[in-house]
Length: 184
Image (cartoon, rainbow, N blue to C red; front, side):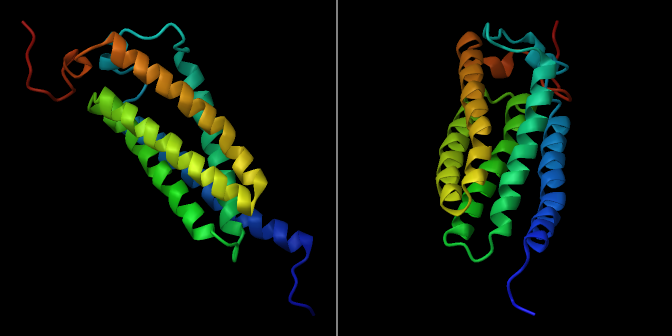
């Protein structure tokens, strides 16, 4: 018996990573959105003036589901590439941008921090681009899986900038749930 794994063994090894990582990335994304009451059902968000290019609400759910699956697959590919040079740094950058991604919904939808959310998207774009470049050195397919996400982040930055521009003082438009503010 040799120490080299067969193609079938390598596929099964990747599949084990993917079966754990993809649902985890997706679940954490869903929990972040649900915990922060993201979307059109949020009274504060519904009251905001939005850019003309703002898609209907269902597009966000579909897009994020698709993107989180791609992100999970990309991460699984890199996790599977044990011994690859630069793997730890690539994973670190990826995880950093993913944590910011998960924090974005609470910052925007729960705390109404539009400017902070815009800065967070800019950080996600930079970190994802850096991670994609490192992923490309390890597994080109993993880097390619990040491209739709990068495109969506740019679109999200455009939408967030539009909301910031159209809604100066957006934090005060509608009191947060549980606020003691009373409208007379």
